[in-house]
Image (tube, rainbow, N blue to C red; front, side):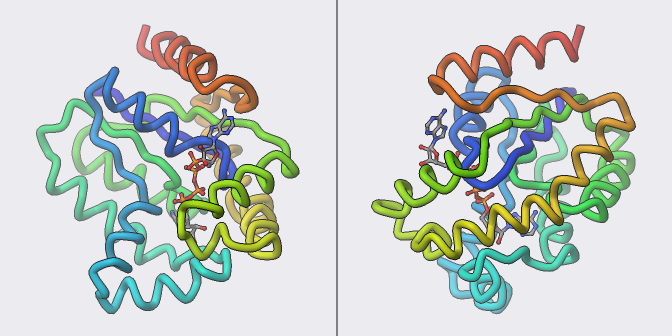
Length: 192
Ligand code: B4P
């Protein structure tokens, strides 16, 4: 089973690369950002609460996203593997993910971190905001807050996987296809 964590700051290209990886490796794509946006679109109570935080560029509480992932793992018990996109974003989320996967008799194969400098991230988020309609891409203050929340709350997750010998960083600047090929090479090394 291949279980991949695709890690990186907002706008690093996690969603972009996930779309390509799921095709190639036949994985189930679990993006907490997408799951939260479907809750918002459906107007659920969870979605209404999450939107208030997401629109400000802040993280949604750990128990909310962990609950969503738990539910999706249950629903996809026969999957060939998973790609975790935008999750885990805190160390408690990473610990919870390890426990959930252990209950299913599996674990994380590797974590691939896309590295992109802050000013390029801001440029990408604001550009996406021109067409995405996403409130969290709308203005520079929110985009900068998201990058800063990543640096303070999410970066420690890299150490968590590094201590397990599962961390691999990749340059996230360049052609989308070239970055994809580099990710594939790392995945294949981790499975060898
Ligand atoms: P996410 O949906 O995870 O959003 P993201 O970080 O913006 O996405 P990503 O890195 O996937 O960027 P993309 O490929 O689209 O999170 C949104 C919010 O949800 C969070 O702020 C938080 O509030 C909440 N949330 C989600 N998960 C959570 C969790 N686990 N815990 C708590 N809260 C959570 O790329 C961005 C842009 O760059 C695109 O326009 C793309 O075309 C472009 N791009 C991609 N690769 C490029 C390249 N190589 N060169 C140039 N441009 C590129």
